[in-house]
Image 1 (cartoon, rainbow, N blue to C red):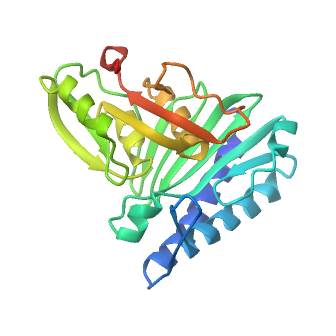
Image 2 (tube, rainbow, N blue to C red):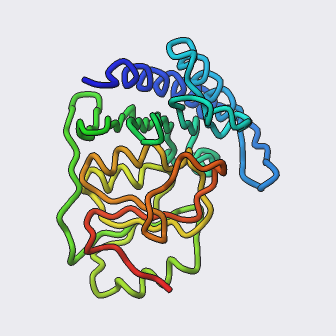
Amino acid sequence: MVYRTELDVAIKAAALAGERILKVYDEAFEVAYKEDSSPVTEADVSAGLAIEKFIKAHFPEDGFLSEEMEDDGSRHQKTRFWVIDPLDGTKEFVKKNDEFAVNIGLVDRGKVVLGVVYIPVTGTIYYAVSGQGAYRQSADKLEQLSVSHRRNPVRLLISRSHPSPRTSELIDLLKSRIECIQEMGSSIKGCLIAAGEFDIYYNFGTSMKWDTCALDCIVKEAGGIMKRLDGEPINYMESSPYNRGFYIVNDSANEVKLS
């Protein structure tokens, strides 16, 4: 398998981060806030350091883009770089609703080639390598992932902690076709679309490259579609780490044109 070593390292790094996250999760912890008012905890920082140290030990020449590291632009001088969210869904972590994950993606020569999403509470790992399929590994089961073929009715996911007025517009446009609507946090939403359990998710707010990179590979390898709101691919070579909205759907028939 191409990127076999990289995948093994990413999975081990995610599990190591998960151990640190759960250690904090099971105790009382303090919550600080960044300049953008987003929360950060000891778990975010500790998990970030663990991932960075572990990956650097195996791939010292690679660059990094991580939520808990300063982006000095040096990643653009590298052939490839890792895109990391040590604790995706910090708001869910603080609420203790279990809907948080570790995201690790790898960009090689401008292309996302690997993605790992690890859910610490359940120990479930979603992973994919470009051209080699997407998979879900649980304690006793390994399964290859494939998006559903649902077009009507469809199952819609919406953000639990990042509501948008445009979500109501989306629901209104789809209302005659919606079988169910489920609120959920973090990158778990994209994983469930890749697994065929849901079909549509639109993010209308500001997200970050580390929120989407690992998912980008997993969704596409499962046969799904993940794009910016303007219908273009997410560009991980941009100097800015910001995304101005994106969507994940199981089928092009479920892409929604909003004003």
